[in-house]
Amino acid sequence: MRLTARRLNRATLARQMLLRREPCDPVDAVRRVVALQAQEPASPYLALWSRLEPFDPAALDTAFADHAIVKATLMRITLHAVTASDYPAFHEAMQITLRPARFNHRRFRSAGLSIADTEALIPDLLAFAATPRSNAEIDAFLDSRLGDHPKPSAWWALRQVGPFVHAPADAPWSFGPRPAYIAAREQDRPGDGQASLQWLVRRYLEGFGPASIQDIAAFGLLRRPPVRAAVEALSGSLERLEGPDGTELFDVPEGLRPPEGTAAPPRLMTMWDSVLLAHADRSRIIPAEYRKLVIRSNGDILPTLLVDGYVAGVWRPVDGAIEAIAFHRLAADAWAGLEAEARSLLALLASRDPKVYGRYGRWWADLPRAEVRILGA
Image 1 (cartoon, rainbow, N blue to C red):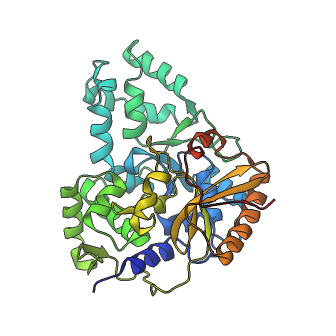
Image 2 (cartoon, rainbow, N blue to C red):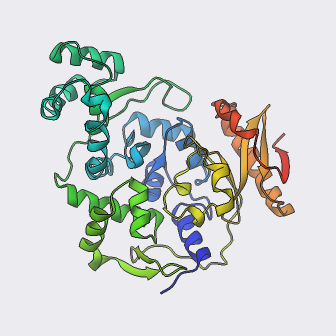
């Protein structure tokens, strides 16, 4: 079966709960969408707000506090919020990327520590981090074991290679600017990197498929050969399809694939929303001509307007309202939908952080402005 570009777009939106908001608790929602980008503490909250009806941010607070959802460095060596049940396999699968990224880096090598000696510290460090610990506390603990050594070194590597997650804090979005860490409560991992990679591949396809080998590799910042091996190991349980250009795609048999004419309502997407980053070919969601506008030179992914399932502009809070910049002219019904979204979002921000993402304002100066609207005022 050959799928059109719009059919791929609608399949991804359906699996990401962006064709309609759904009545779902945060843990089930994160399980369905697989992983939420979490570089900015607000982003998992805004991502679920755009997907759930009703959305109670306090329920996400509770899920983080109970460790039912955890925040950790995973795919693409960036922070993600995932379910505690997915974390062990995801973290084990990502070792093929996390380990070389840290142990081969000059920041680790310059300390003169061996990898074996550093990893041998993990059991004692997990016991020490049974309660939340700051970077300074953990460095001091490691100094007591290793002696004074150049910073960053052991902990800089181990906080990502080892099974450590961010500890929730008393902050508007559960996590503040200065992270604390805690040992992951769920340590029962498969103990088999290939089995865990197969788990990650299947879960990715459930949330973002149909997808190519290149897409899966891009999602995790993984090398293609192990991804291909994992896909082949799963081949008996996957469907093989074709993309619009003939690229081989893979999918789970039960994956949603709505008709390409399915309506996609306007949405205000959070910074770094996973749906914008989950494929090698990001034109599935981001028109090629807009990619460099929303994916900035340092990797910042701006909060976007989604219209008819595709990025059409960006937004930011300004003086108690939402400033929306469209890169092309939008129809009246699209603006009406965005106005309703803005009013709902402002109600959420009012109780948490009305100036969310304010420190990224520098990116707005050079954006094209086909239309600019102040929404929700």
